[in-house]
Image 1 (tube, helix red, strand yellow):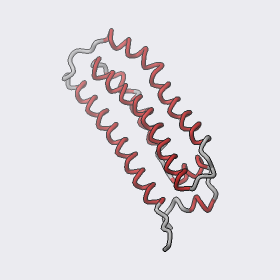
Image 2: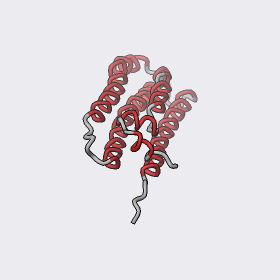
Image 3: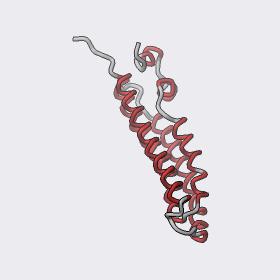
Image 4: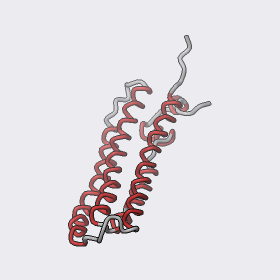
Length: 159
């Protein structure tokens, strides 16, 4: 019985899940903007906004940095003796962890904006969203992150 290479299918499924996370962020950001700009969240609370701003200066870059460096650390500790399929499964879970930490920063911006009715918090959300999209899983990124040999790299794409 021939062994089929299902890795490209798994990658496509995972990319679809990643795009679903991105779309949910986009919807939350747009909904937050619309609710604030139409006045449905009430009058801006600038005193509370100052507190949220102080927290966001540490929290947002911290969450993103932890996500990025934790991902790098976990990938560097990945056992190269594992099969390609096992390494890719672990890699996908590492990407989800990194993505969740980036998404936390994005959602913090939206919640802070909704609670305070101050749109300033929504200005950083597109930056986080852009970085989230830039770090999406791709065959080239996987090859680089996992330091795959050309033979393994070829298994990531459909021929």
